[in-house]
Image (cartoon, rainbow, N blue to C red; front, side, top):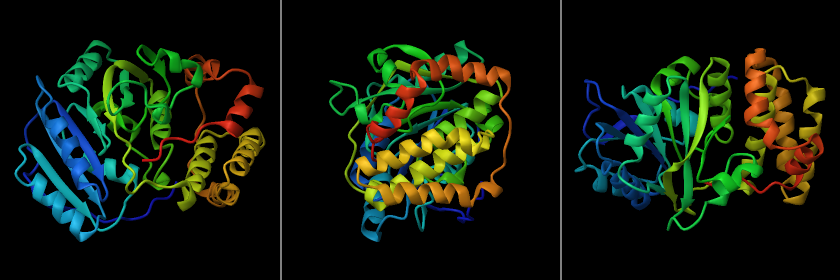
Length: 335
């Protein structure tokens, strides 16, 4: 999928990334949330028993908020803060922060989230060490007070939600809190920056799975998610366009025919009508069609098909239930 040249973000404050080896890069994207970002950084710096590097990318905040972020972060230890002149998108932003680090694992945390305890990153590293095929881990995303699951951040089949405290193989992770083995990141090629927002994690995971890596959800690795109201990508601001476009693009990447995607397309149209964003859903469909010739396509191996069947499709129920899910599904969490 084509990507836009976005330029190189500038160093804003903090200390330069270290040249030597260390355990984990903790990366945080932010846009007009200096207070929440500071709390997320503090949570990251409190991680014990690992050598970490915290990197923050401001994606086009107002001068006032950028100055406020600079003020609260400039004295922080082991933190590098960068700034871009505009919002590069989730994929491009995380790609940049991952590229400037060398940690064995890459841990991403939403700027309105915090680790539930000071050993989350250490325990994630142990999970990777114990399973050499494990490429990425999705964390358990809870409400801010930790009393219940953050339903809006549940990115897995609904049938698995009752197992939110368990560990299971899956085909994606939720961006609010996750970890990726750097070897897997390099092997799969990072995120597709052209997706900008929504489905970028699923797209990455499919490429990792195609290369023999596994993906797990770990209910014992917990993140507390505030879900800040500022600077979310609203449905009315075009999120539905990206949601629909990106999912169809991903289907086409793996040589799904337009005929086989038709039930999903119908589901998105019906979903748009139900949730009052029909025009954006239709625009998303046409955007996917318009760039189809520019999408690099590849075939799934039988091993990949088996993995997807065992760890995703079987949990989503019958074809009829999957179509209904597209029509009446809850909206994904608005970041």
